[in-house]
Length: 433
Image 1 (cartoon, rainbow, N blue to C red):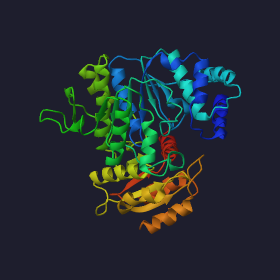
Image 2: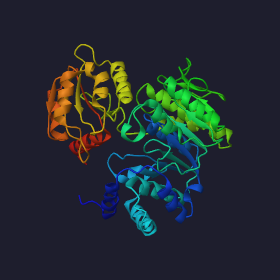
Image 3: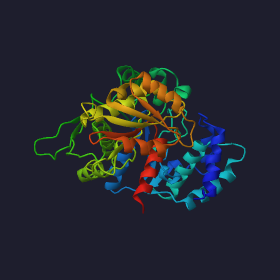
Image 4: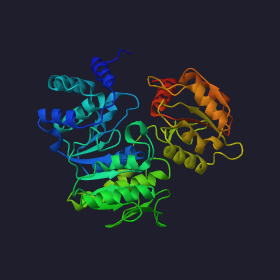
């Protein structure tokens, strides 16, 4: 399929690389008349879980009757996924129209891909007259292009080591960058954190008179009551106990993400927005976030695959816990892992929690990205005690993993969302129209 010309232009902006800073975005938004001020915003940062929190929030807000914009990155299959209104991705025609307008305004500013895309999204939400926009930080927070919004609530999900080349080597440095989205007197909801991150965020909130809702202290997921549906949970907040909610997204960690989203809703209610309890239960059950602990085609189907975007140490630990909960890693219930990483990832840290569960690793390059060498990945897997096989492309690696899988084993695809996207496209093609 021929790529749409507007996408060729947008992806061409990637030659300007990553540029942390807000001035270009501010100038473009000023030229557009400050579209980001025409609706209310929830701004979400973090290393892991921020996309899931955004998905829960968008679904809950829609069920409450609000018109909702959702801006996330990266996309899985097509650019339009990044910018949605009420669950509908932006059309390429709208992308083309907005791109033409922004190109005329950008002059000599030379915006990066992410800067341009962020401005495009914020303008589109204004055009679409959304009531609320859920805006996910791209990387870091303080100097991220999204940090031009004036949010009703800010959110920081779990912080861990990732993107060290841009955000700093230590957890403290990375947390400082995430804390950069905090705004004076604007309520902040902070998900589960390591103690040193919690302490830093508490200090930054105190310095700016930020009302802070802290996971564990102010809100937490609780086991359901006897009369509640199996698999559901309740959330304790300062406003009381939530109704029983059944998260649509798999994994025990999604309890924490859903609890974070419900604490945001508690803050929005306090600010005067209306959220009936039915919006909480229906939204939690309808949230969709493909490629994150996603069973293909379904967990009840024999031979189903598991796809997950885990690409850092914290994400790998969550994935390993989930696999153990599903009974993998013991006896013959082993994992065959199709793995590939971007070149900047700490691969040994990702391998460590998962290696003991695996009987084989199939190393492949990441399509269309600067890929970690499959040869080096295979060496690291062998050092971690996992036999490795090397393949030149995702399709062959996936075919071999599926072909060698024994009845009690699982084929796992993990290491990068770009890898997950490639595998999903292969699986969709196998299913046909």
